[in-house]
Length: 411
Image (tube, rainbow, N blue to C red; front, side, top):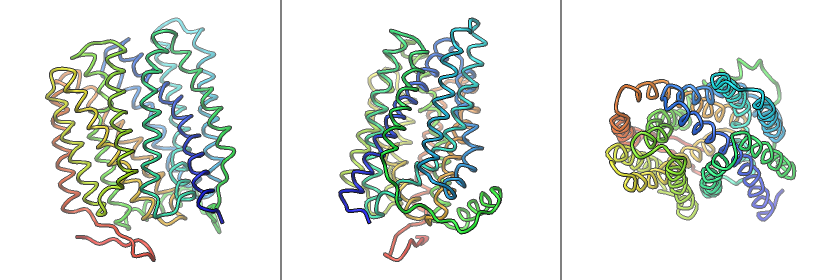
């Protein structure tokens, strides 16, 4: 049995390893989106890349969740990281041979598809590993620590991406991702995971996927957070993933304006992670979730009303705080409410929602942004988020633990 000091060290080591790989992934993702945004200035192209970055993850996450319940999660994560790094290496070697922009964009789309498939394997396993390392009573605090550490990385990644794109090239961004993946995998190899899930028998994958979906639908303590998470992701697209397009159209099309928005947003997320770590949120998680959603929706609507950069950046900072509060609360609810034997599949569903609701939002709002004012779209999405917050406050099941297990009461 691990002592308190041992599990804390192992958990922080795991968080650090994931932050290192996240740093490289964020640089590549931002570099590609910024490259496409400034090269094409097309909402449709930005939407296409966003869809290709998430759609494969949607399909693979169902299988990845089953694998996370069935096999060693540590080696699943290492294998997925290695696969993504190899795909990136292939693109790095191919780029000097590509001269036409349409071919380059197509190749980048292909790389995004394969990287997304790797994320579909990795993400459910990463989320399911945390309850293996951290006692239940410490989950909210350590999810806050993880959110803070990831936000620090995401805070630094935009500046790094801007420096790389300004002083070097897109190929250099790919190289950084390969090196960080190697470092992260090497560090994760030093983490020892105990309490691996025990599976007495393995049904066909499709039956296990169906069993996981039935479990989520029948258990309000699991299904309700997942449903709210999907709505949250969908309505966050205009202010989140189309922020770069808005900045380039309204405030100026430079890498440094794009960087300022990203830095402020991730700075807000870092502050939100620290707040959740030190405070832990309201004891009633329903109230915590509804407050986070209400603040998030309000900032989204106000960002659509801003006509100068400084007020927009202030709203973006508060937006980041609220985003972390919502994500941390939902993740903690799921970790506490889900039986260990099915956590991989539940987090596979969460990953599938992440990978499907964003592309659905991009498929709708991206082309819409080419024909309608993006600010108006953001205001409407902010109102929708406020309505979601009201639904959570009045209708969301209140989840609590009596010490013997998780219970769900409708209050």
